[in-house]
Image (cartoon, rainbow, N blue to C red; front, side, top):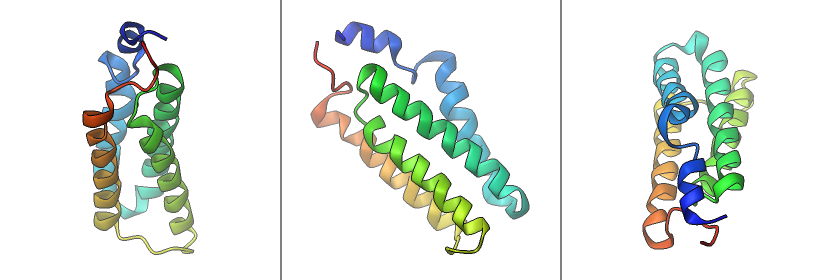
Length: 119
């Protein structure tokens, strides 16, 4: 897929970015303050972002999505396990780790470019 069509089919643009990433991020922040609602807020938010990233990686080869997609899905699984008290949950540390890895994945676009698929 040519780079120009990657730019237009990238889900991280326009309203799709708001629906697929901005609203889930707001939900993650909101859930960090409300422990009782955390599972029902965080799991769907992380799944939406993870699936959207994997779709974006498949559609246009967005570099950071190759890391962020699996990261968000693994994070959703971790949150589910914490709901069963199988793993510890420290919300602040958890969100900071997710943020740090996601930022590092985005920074990987500097040397490697935004899109993996060739022009």
